[in-house]
Length: 385
Image (cartoon, rainbow, N blue to C red; front, side, top):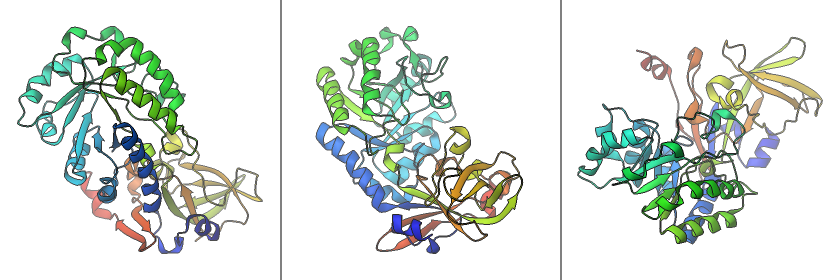
């Protein structure tokens, strides 16, 4: 714990366990980078709620970002009620029984097909407020290595493929949206734009905006911000459109932690440790991606004297967080601090096995660790019937 406190400046003994702890200092650093891109280019950067939805941070985010983008009715409502600026929406399809409520929340709506556009265009255009209409297209090119996260993977349902594009049906459409990235740099965007412009560039001249989607790792230390600014400026100047970006991950990258406690250590061919958290319930990307979460003070298996396989507290055999080595043997009561646990983590948690969710906490230097939400039995009970 001493190393974790030294690295983060957080007294981890003051946090509940398990708990997500988001550092407001680090959020502000990320949002300042994003705001600088907006200020230098005139583009709009949106917080994608699918990546980070901790709405207790929205009052601070409003000072830096243009609004939010949503992928469901509930996300759109959350953005409308709690963020209070522009609300954008995209979904692979909109349900008939939800569309009217959707339109009360959104300022931009992006359709995934021309059939959906035709079905709902009149509703949008005759709404009491102006709502900008967009279409999502599939540029047919990406460099994402994991199919689960590749929007342009073969036979993808996300975005209109070029062979199905209907130029004659663009009346009333203000913008074109594409999304072809995941945790990538501006160099990848530059290559994607070659393919996108080759197919759709001639249609951008009749648009008001173009949305570059998400997956931009803008706040990563080695990200080429200057190249991004150059690309945004070129597109805006060439086609007289506003560029929109909607990174979820870059907004909260490296800003949060998951603190967990060792409950027991056992032996079965190797040393095992069970913690009061869960890969499947609390950090599912460790199973889906797959992704190896870093623990402060740990090493790779065999790197330090004591290696353990960390497992969660569910009965799922594969609820394995990973293999880690430590300087000292683990004991019940020891705390472990996992890093980069703000984005695409809290939004994916669930209560399989009735395992409770981690508390949600914020940290700042004035107040220390403050718990903003804890979960109780009723949260589990009420979602099932």
